Amino acid sequence: MVLKWHDRGYGSPDISRLLNMPEEEVINIIFNRTQKTASQSPEFIEPPLFGEP
Image (tube, rainbow, N blue to C red; front, side):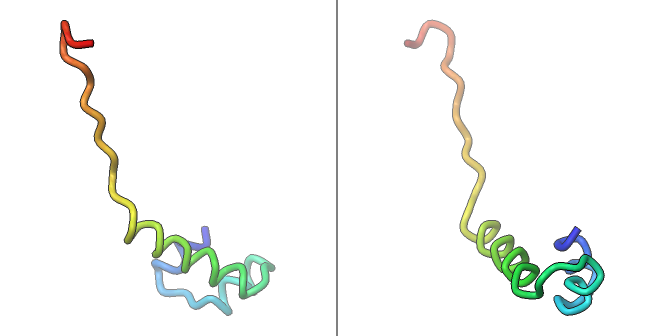
C-alpha cells in the first residue's frame, strides 16, 4: 500500500500519517523498493533438453 500510494504521488509524511506508521519506516520501504528493482534482474534458467544429464 505504501508503494502504491507513493506511485500515485503521496508524500512520505502523508502516507505515514494515514497508515499510522513512523515516517522513517515509510521512507525505508520506498528506498528499498527502488534499490532492489534497479539492481536485480530476472534470472532465467534453461531447462535441460531431452537426453542431457
